[in-house]
Image: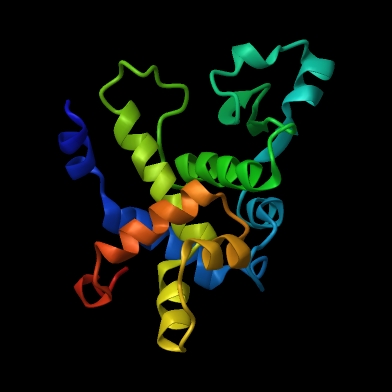
Length: 184
């Protein structure tokens, strides 16, 4: 599949609906940026484990995780998001929320890059993480209230990377709120 084919196969309505349900229903989200571990604890039985602790406890080196940032897997009878504690905080938050997105969206875990579902699931998880950490509705409301929505504004307000903020700016520029479905 080409990137365009993968991009078109993503179920954006499903992703936005799942993220928006959590944004509206969670009592763990009172302010942005919110504590991702509190949201995950409130919404699931998923455990979080630092890569260093996994190595210490289970003898698993980071290279076996398949990602240098974060990965979700079933391990010892539990679903665990393992994450690299040495990353900067905003990368840890995005990585954990990306992996939580795989769980919430019912994705298959541990797919190889050659699997046809892999790239679709990665795009969906990225979209989920972006909506959770930088909700489109809040950004549009801030703009309506006169805020200058810029990359720097998003970085400062939502504690995300410059790359994530830039991508969010592009998606906001390419969508119109009125085009959204009522479900979203």
